[in-house]
Length: 188
Ligand SMILES: Cc1cc2nc3c(=O)[nH]c(=O)nc-3n(C[C@H](O)[C@H](O)[C@H](O)COP(=O)(O)O)c2cc1C
Image (tube, rainbow, N blue to C red):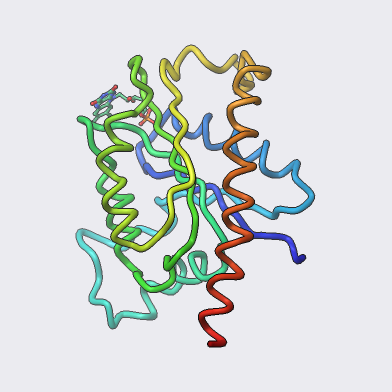
């Protein structure tokens, strides 16, 4: 089987966001897998302005649309802002609709507090479902300021590694299955 493409999406454009450390760590772990190709996508690259563009503006939305098209699944890294998700993530995601259909995703919450973004992942789940994506699992990075050393390396690679690999296994298997499902539907 061809390699599956699973990008890691950093869901905030906030300067100095701690979530970038989580995104880089998850990207690094995914890059090690021979059956997967990945890239790190930052929402700031795809922001277009004050609100979502007209859905007919294919030229404007093409950069994000191309990334969504190419993806077999996603890892979304989402910091918790007042229990919700960053507005810029929603505005970027809203640029397209059909291309998300039946694509699996792993949701990753990030917070400086002890809940690890549990509330933001609850909040974004109905949005993801509305896009007709499939949530394969959730990971919670709590106390994010304490998790990485000065070089950006995770301080406890063993215990985080176990959690991450379990999620990646489920994400990969579901991505494989859903790709077949989508292809079968297209050719039916
Ligand atoms: C506008 C804003 C709202 C926040 N609200 C929450 C919150 O509701 N719960 C929480 O645990 N942390 C909250 N935080 C702290 C974030 O969890 C913290 O900044 C963490 O590092 C993840 O966000 P970051 O990637 O932007 O740094 C908030 C941060 C910002 C900037």
